[in-house]
Length: 97
Image (tube, rainbow, N blue to C red; front, side):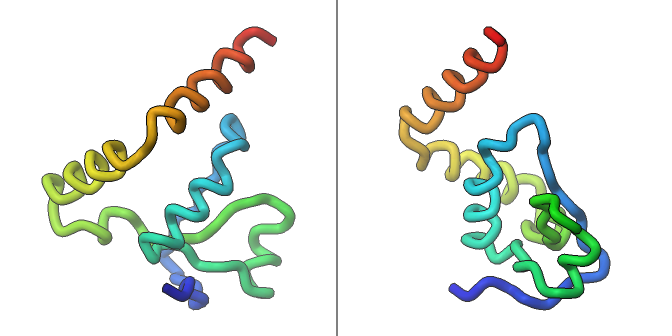
C-alpha cells in the first residue's frame, strides 16, 4: 500500500508533544489506514522541523459512528498485552520525574 503524496487542503494536523514516543506508531497507523500524506517540499515549508503529518479528517474515513467504534475496538483487540503494558510503564516513568 503506497502512502498518499497529494496534500489535501482541508487536512487536519496532528501532533502530540506530550507523547512524543508515539509519533512513529501514529505515523505507521495512518499509513496503514491510508490517512497519511508524506511530506513533500511544499509541506515541509509549512510544517518546518516539527513531526506533524497532514491527513484527511478522520470523520470521512468511516460512514457512521458505529463503524468508527467497531474499527477502534478491532484495533484495540488486535494489540498485544505488551503494547498496553509498555504504554502504562512509560506513563509511570514520566510521572515519577
